[in-house]
Length: 281
Image: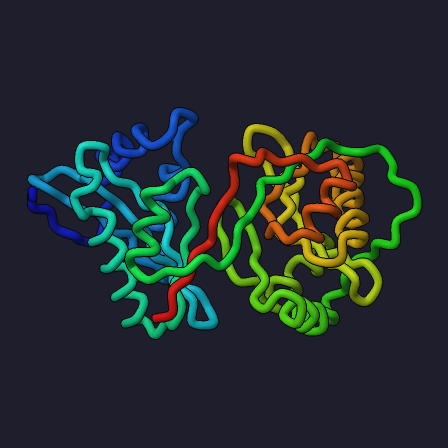
């Protein structure tokens, strides 16, 4: 088997990584958008696999609060796939996470990426959640909704309710995934983008964002089917009020969430979605 080595990325690697990123998906790759942040982050390590002076793989590990590490950005050159590059990068990321005192590693992959799923399972990761990619257009009005803003002082109560309901709630944020914390709830509440139905039948967090169009990014939504429906409609109305073109989010696919979002006019492709894996360290 050809030899390669793992090392920390350097600024001078960017051109080679740009060439590697062009081979990922037909629509492009976000790696170049996060390159400098990942390379210079004090809370993460950006690693590359190198063979004969050529970059053949890359992966990033982020050291998050509450003992969690998040693995992202795994890419391997097509000619080097199935040669142990992704395995070696993942193992190195896990070892670095342990040395930083993290006790849980998480990663995300597409439901269609069977190779990444096999690798995660081989290395002892277990499936934590499946997220759907829900989308809906703005809506001019939805009648009377029992939806209210969450106040910052409620962050602990909201988080306790979420933990009691789902264990460790997941937050989607610009194609990154993390365990939702009380501090996250407070941030969304202070920004006036945290909402609840009653106390509490449902909770949703969203934020304004821009990708190829202006959108409301639905980062988390939990609750009964009825509450999720109301929150979904409220997000669509908020998009209309802000003049945004779409509401989009990757949300945990419980039966109640699916029923509520469908009733609120959201749709999602059945063959697409994201799998969240986790591994105790």
